[in-house]
Length: 512
Image (cartoon, one colour):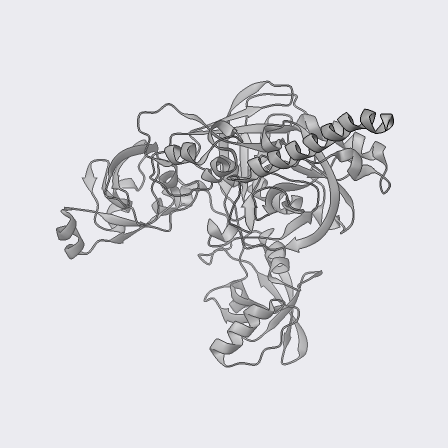
Protein backbone atom coordinates (compact mmCIF):
# COMPACT_ATOMS: atom_id res chain seq x y z
CA UNK A 1 0.00 0.00 0.00
CA UNK A 2 2.85 2.39 0.84
CA UNK A 3 4.46 1.60 -2.52
CA UNK A 4 1.22 2.43 -4.29
CA UNK A 5 1.03 5.79 -2.50
CA UNK A 6 4.61 6.57 -3.57
CA UNK A 7 3.81 5.80 -7.19
CA UNK A 8 0.55 7.74 -7.24
CA UNK A 9 2.14 11.21 -7.78
CA UNK A 10 4.13 9.88 -10.75
CA UNK A 11 0.96 8.43 -12.27
CA UNK A 12 -0.84 11.76 -11.87
CA UNK A 13 2.08 13.61 -13.53
CA UNK A 14 2.03 11.12 -16.41
CA UNK A 15 -1.69 11.58 -16.96
CA UNK A 16 -1.40 15.37 -16.85
CA UNK A 17 1.57 15.30 -19.22
CA UNK A 18 -0.31 13.18 -21.73
CA UNK A 19 -3.38 15.39 -21.49
CA UNK A 20 -1.24 18.51 -21.99
CA UNK A 21 0.42 17.01 -25.06
CA UNK A 22 -2.92 16.00 -26.56
CA UNK A 23 -4.35 19.45 -25.83
CA UNK A 24 -1.36 21.15 -27.47
CA UNK A 25 -1.74 19.03 -30.57
CA UNK A 26 -5.43 19.90 -30.84
CA UNK A 27 -4.67 23.59 -30.22
CA UNK A 28 -2.11 23.82 -32.99
CA UNK A 29 -4.33 21.84 -35.33
CA UNK A 30 -7.60 23.68 -34.80
CA UNK A 31 -7.01 26.47 -37.36
CA UNK A 32 -3.67 25.63 -38.82
CA UNK A 33 -5.32 23.09 -41.09
CA UNK A 34 -5.78 23.11 -44.79
CA UNK A 35 -8.70 21.65 -46.68
CA UNK A 36 -6.43 20.84 -49.61
CA UNK A 37 -4.98 17.37 -49.85
CA UNK A 38 -1.66 18.86 -50.90
CA UNK A 39 -0.28 21.92 -49.16
CA UNK A 40 2.80 24.02 -49.59
CA UNK A 41 5.07 23.40 -46.65
CA UNK A 42 8.20 24.35 -44.96
CA UNK A 43 10.12 21.85 -42.84
CA UNK A 44 10.07 18.85 -40.60
CA UNK A 45 9.64 18.11 -36.93
CA UNK A 46 10.81 14.63 -36.11
CA UNK A 47 13.45 13.05 -33.87
CA UNK A 48 16.34 12.12 -36.18
CA UNK A 49 17.76 9.75 -33.59
CA UNK A 50 14.74 7.48 -33.88
CA UNK A 51 14.93 7.61 -37.66
CA UNK A 52 18.52 6.42 -37.54
CA UNK A 53 18.03 3.53 -35.19
CA UNK A 54 18.70 0.06 -36.45
CA UNK A 55 18.65 0.50 -40.22
CA UNK A 56 21.35 3.05 -40.95
CA UNK A 57 24.76 4.17 -39.80
CA UNK A 58 24.23 7.04 -37.38
CA UNK A 59 27.63 8.52 -38.29
CA UNK A 60 26.39 8.92 -41.86
CA UNK A 61 23.52 11.06 -40.63
CA UNK A 62 25.85 13.12 -38.46
CA UNK A 63 28.18 13.78 -41.40
CA UNK A 64 25.33 14.76 -43.71
CA UNK A 65 23.81 17.05 -41.08
CA UNK A 66 27.14 18.81 -40.44
CA UNK A 67 27.58 19.42 -44.16
CA UNK A 68 24.01 20.55 -44.81
CA UNK A 69 22.88 22.67 -41.85
CA UNK A 70 25.29 25.60 -42.51
CA UNK A 71 24.04 25.81 -46.13
CA UNK A 72 20.32 26.02 -45.34
CA UNK A 73 18.94 29.50 -44.74
CA UNK A 74 15.74 31.09 -43.48
CA UNK A 75 13.88 33.26 -45.99
CA UNK A 76 11.55 35.97 -44.70
CA UNK A 77 8.97 37.24 -47.16
CA UNK A 78 7.88 40.85 -46.61
CA UNK A 79 5.00 42.31 -48.57
CA UNK A 80 2.42 45.07 -48.53
CA UNK A 81 -0.90 43.37 -49.16
CA UNK A 82 -3.24 45.45 -51.26
CA UNK A 83 -5.66 42.83 -52.55
CA UNK A 84 -8.96 42.06 -50.89
CA UNK A 85 -9.48 38.58 -49.50
CA UNK A 86 -8.10 36.39 -52.26
CA UNK A 87 -5.84 33.53 -51.25
CA UNK A 88 -2.42 33.87 -52.87
CA UNK A 89 0.45 31.44 -52.50
CA UNK A 90 2.01 33.61 -49.83
CA UNK A 91 -1.27 33.63 -47.89
CA UNK A 92 -0.73 29.92 -47.38
CA UNK A 93 2.00 30.88 -44.93
CA UNK A 94 -0.49 33.03 -43.02
CA UNK A 95 -2.90 30.12 -43.02
CA UNK A 96 -0.26 27.94 -41.37
CA UNK A 97 1.35 30.51 -39.09
CA UNK A 98 -0.79 33.58 -38.56
CA UNK A 99 0.97 36.98 -38.63
CA UNK A 100 4.75 37.03 -38.46
CA UNK A 101 4.95 33.26 -38.74
CA UNK A 102 3.34 32.87 -35.30
CA UNK A 103 1.65 29.48 -34.87
CA UNK A 104 -0.68 31.06 -32.29
CA UNK A 105 -2.25 33.40 -34.90
CA UNK A 106 -6.07 33.14 -34.87
CA UNK A 107 -8.71 33.54 -37.53
CA UNK A 108 -9.51 37.13 -36.59
CA UNK A 109 -5.88 38.09 -37.09
CA UNK A 110 -5.85 36.31 -40.44
CA UNK A 111 -9.00 38.10 -41.55
CA UNK A 112 -7.54 41.45 -40.59
CA UNK A 113 -4.46 40.65 -42.67
CA UNK A 114 -6.57 39.92 -45.71
CA UNK A 115 -8.35 43.29 -45.63
CA UNK A 116 -6.90 46.06 -47.82
CA UNK A 117 -3.91 47.59 -46.07
CA UNK A 118 -2.74 50.80 -47.68
CA UNK A 119 0.07 52.98 -46.35
CA UNK A 120 1.16 50.17 -44.04
CA UNK A 121 4.86 49.37 -43.58
CA UNK A 122 6.10 46.12 -45.06
CA UNK A 123 6.16 43.25 -42.60
CA UNK A 124 7.20 39.60 -42.73
CA UNK A 125 4.26 37.69 -44.12
CA UNK A 126 5.81 34.26 -44.21
CA UNK A 127 8.84 32.13 -43.52
CA UNK A 128 10.50 29.59 -45.76
CA UNK A 129 13.84 27.95 -46.37
CA UNK A 130 16.53 28.07 -49.02
CA UNK A 131 19.79 26.34 -49.90
CA UNK A 132 23.10 28.06 -50.72
CA UNK A 133 24.38 26.56 -53.99
CA UNK A 134 27.49 28.65 -54.62
CA UNK A 135 30.12 30.37 -52.44
CA UNK A 136 29.22 33.78 -53.93
CA UNK A 137 25.69 33.82 -52.54
CA UNK A 138 23.29 32.16 -54.98
CA UNK A 139 20.40 30.53 -53.11
CA UNK A 140 17.75 28.17 -54.44
CA UNK A 141 14.26 28.07 -52.94
CA UNK A 142 10.61 27.65 -53.96
CA UNK A 143 8.62 30.05 -56.09
CA UNK A 144 5.80 30.00 -53.53
CA UNK A 145 8.21 31.02 -50.75
CA UNK A 146 9.09 34.29 -52.51
CA UNK A 147 5.75 34.97 -54.23
CA UNK A 148 4.41 38.49 -53.76
CA UNK A 149 7.45 39.74 -51.86
CA UNK A 150 8.41 43.41 -51.73
CA UNK A 151 11.51 42.46 -49.77
CA UNK A 152 13.28 39.18 -49.11
CA UNK A 153 15.49 38.76 -46.06
CA UNK A 154 17.88 35.82 -45.85
CA UNK A 155 19.16 34.68 -42.44
CA UNK A 156 22.08 32.24 -42.38
CA UNK A 157 22.46 29.48 -39.83
CA UNK A 158 24.99 31.71 -38.01
CA UNK A 159 22.22 34.38 -37.68
CA UNK A 160 23.82 36.84 -40.14
CA UNK A 161 21.12 38.62 -42.12
CA UNK A 162 21.06 39.91 -45.72
CA UNK A 163 18.57 41.52 -48.07
CA UNK A 164 18.36 39.25 -51.11
CA UNK A 165 17.82 40.02 -54.78
CA UNK A 166 15.28 37.82 -56.55
CA UNK A 167 17.10 36.73 -59.71
CA UNK A 168 14.17 34.80 -61.18
CA UNK A 169 11.38 32.30 -60.62
CA UNK A 170 9.72 29.42 -62.44
CA UNK A 171 6.13 28.63 -61.36
CA UNK A 172 6.13 25.53 -63.61
CA UNK A 173 8.61 23.80 -61.30
CA UNK A 174 8.10 25.94 -58.15
CA UNK A 175 11.77 26.96 -58.17
CA UNK A 176 13.22 30.40 -57.38
CA UNK A 177 16.78 31.75 -57.45
CA UNK A 178 17.97 34.46 -55.05
CA UNK A 179 21.32 36.22 -54.57
CA UNK A 180 22.97 37.80 -51.55
CA UNK A 181 26.16 39.83 -51.67
CA UNK A 182 28.68 37.65 -49.82
CA UNK A 183 31.63 35.40 -50.61
CA UNK A 184 33.17 32.31 -49.10
CA UNK A 185 29.83 30.82 -48.10
CA UNK A 186 29.31 27.10 -47.42
CA UNK A 187 27.24 25.51 -50.18
CA UNK A 188 25.82 22.21 -51.41
CA UNK A 189 26.58 20.40 -54.64
CA UNK A 190 23.76 19.06 -56.79
CA UNK A 191 23.69 15.28 -56.96
CA UNK A 192 22.41 13.31 -59.95
CA UNK A 193 18.82 12.76 -58.84
CA UNK A 194 18.31 10.14 -61.56
CA UNK A 195 20.46 7.83 -59.42
CA UNK A 196 18.22 8.19 -56.36
CA UNK A 197 16.70 4.85 -55.38
CA UNK A 198 13.44 4.08 -53.62
CA UNK A 199 14.32 2.93 -50.11
CA UNK A 200 17.53 4.94 -49.69
CA UNK A 201 18.01 7.07 -46.59
CA UNK A 202 17.65 10.84 -46.88
CA UNK A 203 17.65 13.91 -44.62
CA UNK A 204 15.33 16.91 -44.87
CA UNK A 205 16.87 20.13 -43.56
CA UNK A 206 15.06 23.44 -43.14
CA UNK A 207 13.18 25.68 -40.74
CA UNK A 208 9.84 24.06 -39.92
CA UNK A 209 7.32 25.78 -37.69
CA UNK A 210 9.86 28.53 -36.96
CA UNK A 211 12.42 26.00 -35.64
CA UNK A 212 15.68 26.93 -37.35
CA UNK A 213 18.16 24.36 -38.68
CA UNK A 214 15.99 21.31 -38.10
CA UNK A 215 17.11 17.94 -39.47
CA UNK A 216 14.77 14.96 -39.98
CA UNK A 217 15.50 11.56 -41.49
CA UNK A 218 13.54 9.12 -43.61
CA UNK A 219 13.68 7.20 -46.85
CA UNK A 220 12.76 7.85 -50.46
CA UNK A 221 9.31 6.27 -50.60
CA UNK A 222 8.60 6.90 -54.31
CA UNK A 223 9.92 8.68 -57.41
CA UNK A 224 8.24 10.44 -60.30
CA UNK A 225 5.24 11.44 -58.21
CA UNK A 226 2.67 13.86 -59.68
CA UNK A 227 0.27 15.48 -57.19
CA UNK A 228 -1.47 18.05 -59.43
CA UNK A 229 -0.29 20.96 -57.31
CA UNK A 230 1.66 23.25 -59.62
CA UNK A 231 -1.18 23.56 -62.13
CA UNK A 232 -2.68 26.10 -59.72
CA UNK A 233 0.00 28.59 -60.77
CA UNK A 234 1.22 27.41 -64.17
CA UNK A 235 -0.36 26.33 -67.42
CA UNK A 236 2.68 24.12 -68.11
CA UNK A 237 3.45 22.46 -64.75
CA UNK A 238 6.29 19.97 -64.45
CA UNK A 239 5.72 17.50 -61.64
CA UNK A 240 7.93 14.50 -61.05
CA UNK A 241 8.54 14.78 -57.33
CA UNK A 242 10.75 12.67 -55.10
CA UNK A 243 8.47 11.42 -52.34
CA UNK A 244 9.91 10.93 -48.85
CA UNK A 245 8.66 10.08 -45.39
CA UNK A 246 11.25 12.36 -43.77
CA UNK A 247 9.09 14.73 -41.73
CA UNK A 248 8.38 18.00 -43.55
CA UNK A 249 6.19 20.78 -42.17
CA UNK A 250 5.27 24.41 -42.92
CA UNK A 251 8.56 26.34 -42.99
CA UNK A 252 10.47 23.61 -44.82
CA UNK A 253 9.60 24.88 -48.30
CA UNK A 254 12.78 25.52 -50.24
CA UNK A 255 14.90 23.45 -47.84
CA UNK A 256 17.31 20.68 -48.73
CA UNK A 257 16.69 16.99 -49.27
CA UNK A 258 20.11 15.33 -49.14
CA UNK A 259 21.60 11.86 -49.24
CA UNK A 260 23.84 10.51 -46.49
CA UNK A 261 26.86 12.15 -48.14
CA UNK A 262 25.22 15.56 -47.81
CA UNK A 263 24.67 15.91 -51.58
CA UNK A 264 21.59 17.84 -52.69
CA UNK A 265 19.10 15.47 -54.33
CA UNK A 266 15.98 17.64 -54.09
CA UNK A 267 14.33 20.89 -52.98
CA UNK A 268 11.50 20.27 -50.52
CA UNK A 269 8.27 21.74 -51.87
CA UNK A 270 5.05 20.19 -50.59
CA UNK A 271 3.34 17.79 -48.22
CA UNK A 272 0.37 15.49 -48.55
CA UNK A 273 -1.84 16.54 -45.68
CA UNK A 274 -5.42 17.16 -44.61
CA UNK A 275 -4.29 19.29 -41.67
CA UNK A 276 -1.47 21.39 -43.12
CA UNK A 277 1.07 19.50 -41.02
CA UNK A 278 3.18 16.40 -41.64
CA UNK A 279 1.11 13.25 -42.03
CA UNK A 280 3.66 10.89 -43.54
CA UNK A 281 4.68 12.12 -47.00
CA UNK A 282 6.60 15.07 -48.39
CA UNK A 283 7.62 15.95 -51.93
CA UNK A 284 10.80 17.44 -53.34
CA UNK A 285 11.71 18.81 -56.79
CA UNK A 286 14.46 16.52 -58.16
CA UNK A 287 17.92 18.09 -58.18
CA UNK A 288 18.45 17.57 -61.92
CA UNK A 289 15.35 19.58 -62.77
CA UNK A 290 16.07 22.27 -60.16
CA UNK A 291 19.67 22.62 -61.39
CA UNK A 292 18.57 23.10 -65.00
CA UNK A 293 16.08 25.79 -63.97
CA UNK A 294 18.59 27.85 -61.95
CA UNK A 295 21.24 27.52 -64.67
CA UNK A 296 18.77 28.93 -67.19
CA UNK A 297 17.78 31.78 -64.89
CA UNK A 298 21.42 32.69 -64.24
CA UNK A 299 22.47 32.55 -67.89
CA UNK A 300 19.40 33.81 -69.75
CA UNK A 301 17.25 35.51 -67.14
CA UNK A 302 14.40 33.09 -67.82
CA UNK A 303 13.84 29.36 -68.17
CA UNK A 304 14.46 27.82 -71.60
CA UNK A 305 11.88 25.10 -71.94
CA UNK A 306 11.61 22.60 -74.77
CA UNK A 307 8.26 21.08 -75.73
CA UNK A 308 7.48 17.87 -77.56
CA UNK A 309 4.28 19.34 -78.98
CA UNK A 310 1.69 16.69 -78.15
CA UNK A 311 -1.61 16.60 -76.32
CA UNK A 312 -1.34 13.56 -74.07
CA UNK A 313 -3.40 11.02 -72.17
CA UNK A 314 -1.75 9.22 -69.24
CA UNK A 315 -2.63 5.55 -69.73
CA UNK A 316 -1.54 4.78 -66.16
CA UNK A 317 -4.44 6.86 -64.87
CA UNK A 318 -7.49 4.59 -65.06
CA UNK A 319 -9.95 7.36 -64.28
CA UNK A 320 -8.49 9.61 -66.97
CA UNK A 321 -8.68 6.78 -69.52
CA UNK A 322 -12.28 6.00 -68.56
CA UNK A 323 -13.33 9.64 -69.02
CA UNK A 324 -11.56 9.82 -72.39
CA UNK A 325 -13.23 6.61 -73.58
CA UNK A 326 -16.63 7.91 -72.50
CA UNK A 327 -16.20 11.26 -74.21
CA UNK A 328 -14.67 9.93 -77.43
CA UNK A 329 -16.43 6.56 -77.70
CA UNK A 330 -13.10 4.73 -77.76
CA UNK A 331 -11.91 1.57 -76.06
CA UNK A 332 -8.40 2.41 -74.89
CA UNK A 333 -6.86 0.07 -72.32
CA UNK A 334 -5.24 1.53 -69.22
CA UNK A 335 -1.65 0.51 -68.57
CA UNK A 336 1.64 2.30 -69.04
CA UNK A 337 2.72 4.90 -71.56
CA UNK A 338 1.46 8.19 -72.98
CA UNK A 339 -1.27 8.12 -75.62
CA UNK A 340 -1.01 11.01 -78.11
CA UNK A 341 -4.41 12.70 -78.37
CA UNK A 342 -3.28 15.47 -80.71
CA UNK A 343 -0.21 16.92 -82.41
CA UNK A 344 0.54 20.66 -82.24
CA UNK A 345 1.19 22.44 -85.51
CA UNK A 346 4.82 23.34 -86.28
CA UNK A 347 6.00 21.25 -83.33
CA UNK A 348 8.93 18.91 -83.05
CA UNK A 349 6.52 15.97 -82.81
CA UNK A 350 4.85 16.95 -86.11
CA UNK A 351 8.20 17.41 -87.83
CA UNK A 352 9.32 13.94 -86.67
CA UNK A 353 6.17 12.24 -87.98
CA UNK A 354 4.45 11.37 -84.71
CA UNK A 355 0.68 10.98 -85.03
CA UNK A 356 -2.48 10.89 -82.98
CA UNK A 357 -2.93 7.40 -81.54
CA UNK A 358 0.79 6.70 -81.05
CA UNK A 359 1.77 5.54 -77.55
CA UNK A 360 5.07 6.91 -76.18
CA UNK A 361 6.96 4.32 -74.15
CA UNK A 362 10.49 5.78 -73.93
CA UNK A 363 12.34 9.08 -74.14
CA UNK A 364 15.99 8.39 -74.87
CA UNK A 365 16.80 5.57 -72.44
CA UNK A 366 14.16 6.46 -69.87
CA UNK A 367 11.01 4.35 -69.64
CA UNK A 368 7.81 6.39 -69.80
CA UNK A 369 5.07 4.80 -67.70
CA UNK A 370 3.16 7.96 -66.74
CA UNK A 371 2.84 11.66 -67.46
CA UNK A 372 5.19 12.39 -64.54
CA UNK A 373 7.89 10.38 -66.35
CA UNK A 374 7.31 12.32 -69.58
CA UNK A 375 7.25 15.60 -67.67
CA UNK A 376 10.62 14.89 -66.08
CA UNK A 377 12.22 13.62 -69.29
CA UNK A 378 11.18 16.64 -71.39
CA UNK A 379 11.16 19.25 -68.61
CA UNK A 380 14.93 19.07 -68.22
CA UNK A 381 15.46 19.83 -71.95
CA UNK A 382 15.82 23.10 -73.85
CA UNK A 383 14.63 24.23 -77.29
CA UNK A 384 16.92 22.75 -79.92
CA UNK A 385 17.70 19.63 -77.87
CA UNK A 386 17.15 16.34 -79.66
CA UNK A 387 15.45 13.36 -78.02
CA UNK A 388 14.82 9.83 -79.19
CA UNK A 389 11.14 8.93 -78.82
CA UNK A 390 10.17 5.26 -78.75
CA UNK A 391 6.48 4.68 -79.45
CA UNK A 392 3.94 2.07 -80.42
CA UNK A 393 1.89 2.46 -83.59
CA UNK A 394 -0.64 -0.25 -84.38
CA UNK A 395 1.17 -2.48 -81.88
CA UNK A 396 4.56 -2.11 -83.56
CA UNK A 397 7.48 -0.38 -81.82
CA UNK A 398 9.07 2.52 -83.70
CA UNK A 399 11.55 5.29 -82.95
CA UNK A 400 11.63 8.94 -83.99
CA UNK A 401 14.26 11.62 -83.39
CA UNK A 402 12.52 14.81 -82.26
CA UNK A 403 14.03 18.29 -82.10
CA UNK A 404 12.28 20.14 -79.29
CA UNK A 405 10.88 23.64 -79.78
CA UNK A 406 9.52 26.32 -77.49
CA UNK A 407 5.80 27.08 -77.38
CA UNK A 408 6.15 29.53 -80.24
CA UNK A 409 7.77 26.92 -82.48
CA UNK A 410 11.35 28.17 -82.16
CA UNK A 411 14.47 26.09 -81.56
CA UNK A 412 16.62 29.06 -80.49
CA UNK A 413 17.02 30.44 -76.97
CA UNK A 414 15.21 33.57 -75.83
CA UNK A 415 16.43 36.34 -73.54
CA UNK A 416 14.41 38.84 -71.55
CA UNK A 417 14.75 41.25 -74.46
CA UNK A 418 12.82 38.79 -76.64
CA UNK A 419 9.82 38.69 -74.32
CA UNK A 420 6.57 40.34 -75.28
CA UNK A 421 5.05 43.05 -73.10
CA UNK A 422 2.48 40.63 -71.67
CA UNK A 423 5.23 38.12 -70.85
CA UNK A 424 7.27 40.80 -69.11
CA UNK A 425 4.45 42.02 -66.88
CA UNK A 426 2.79 38.63 -66.42
CA UNK A 427 -0.72 38.90 -67.81
CA UNK A 428 -3.06 39.19 -70.78
CA UNK A 429 -5.98 41.52 -71.40
CA UNK A 430 -9.51 41.26 -72.74
CA UNK A 431 -11.69 44.08 -74.01
CA UNK A 432 -14.68 45.31 -72.00
CA UNK A 433 -18.03 45.51 -73.74
CA UNK A 434 -19.57 48.93 -74.25
CA UNK A 435 -22.58 47.81 -72.21
CA UNK A 436 -20.31 46.95 -69.25
CA UNK A 437 -18.61 50.35 -69.43
CA UNK A 438 -21.98 52.14 -69.49
CA UNK A 439 -23.40 50.08 -66.62
CA UNK A 440 -20.37 50.72 -64.40
CA UNK A 441 -19.59 54.26 -65.49
CA UNK A 442 -16.22 53.48 -67.04
CA UNK A 443 -14.64 55.42 -69.89
CA UNK A 444 -11.94 52.80 -70.44
CA UNK A 445 -10.75 49.44 -69.22
CA UNK A 446 -9.52 45.94 -69.98
CA UNK A 447 -10.07 42.73 -68.02
CA UNK A 448 -6.92 41.09 -66.62
CA UNK A 449 -6.57 37.46 -67.75
CA UNK A 450 -4.06 34.66 -67.13
CA UNK A 451 -2.18 36.61 -64.45
CA UNK A 452 1.15 34.90 -63.81
CA UNK A 453 1.99 34.22 -60.19
CA UNK A 454 5.13 36.14 -59.26
CA UNK A 455 4.76 38.46 -62.28
CA UNK A 456 4.77 42.24 -62.01
CA UNK A 457 0.99 42.52 -62.08
CA UNK A 458 0.55 39.87 -59.41
CA UNK A 459 3.12 41.60 -57.19
CA UNK A 460 1.00 44.76 -57.03
CA UNK A 461 -2.18 42.84 -56.26
CA UNK A 462 -3.81 42.43 -59.68
CA UNK A 463 -5.62 39.12 -60.21
CA UNK A 464 -7.71 37.56 -62.95
CA UNK A 465 -10.91 39.55 -63.67
CA UNK A 466 -9.61 42.80 -62.18
CA UNK A 467 -10.15 45.80 -64.48
CA UNK A 468 -7.21 47.96 -65.54
CA UNK A 469 -8.37 51.43 -66.63
CA UNK A 470 -5.13 53.38 -67.14
CA UNK A 471 -1.41 52.72 -67.63
CA UNK A 472 0.99 55.63 -67.17
CA UNK A 473 -1.96 58.02 -67.22
CA UNK A 474 -3.25 56.76 -70.57
CA UNK A 475 -6.59 54.93 -70.98
CA UNK A 476 -6.43 51.31 -72.18
CA UNK A 477 -9.24 49.49 -74.00
CA UNK A 478 -7.42 46.63 -75.77
CA UNK A 479 -4.34 44.49 -75.35
CA UNK A 480 -2.80 46.44 -78.23
CA UNK A 481 -3.18 49.61 -76.15
CA UNK A 482 -1.23 48.02 -73.33
CA UNK A 483 1.48 46.81 -75.68
CA UNK A 484 1.76 50.19 -77.43
CA UNK A 485 2.24 52.02 -74.14
CA UNK A 486 4.79 49.60 -72.67
CA UNK A 487 6.64 48.31 -75.75
CA UNK A 488 10.33 49.32 -75.43
CA UNK A 489 9.41 51.31 -72.33
CA UNK A 490 11.94 51.48 -69.52
CA UNK A 491 11.17 52.99 -66.18
CA UNK A 492 8.40 53.05 -63.59
CA UNK A 493 4.93 51.89 -64.62
CA UNK A 494 1.84 53.32 -62.95
CA UNK A 495 -1.40 51.30 -63.19
CA UNK A 496 -4.91 52.24 -62.13
CA UNK A 497 -7.23 49.30 -61.56
CA UNK A 498 -10.41 48.08 -59.87
CA UNK A 499 -10.73 44.91 -57.84
CA UNK A 500 -13.76 42.59 -57.89
CA UNK A 501 -15.57 44.85 -55.41
CA UNK A 502 -15.10 47.95 -57.55
CA UNK A 503 -12.49 49.49 -55.25
CA UNK A 504 -9.93 51.71 -56.97
CA UNK A 505 -6.17 51.31 -56.63
CA UNK A 506 -3.16 52.99 -58.13
CA UNK A 507 0.01 50.92 -57.95
CA UNK A 508 3.31 50.76 -59.76
CA UNK A 509 6.36 48.71 -60.61
CA UNK A 510 9.60 49.09 -62.53
CA UNK A 511 9.38 47.70 -66.05
CA UNK A 512 11.53 44.56 -66.29
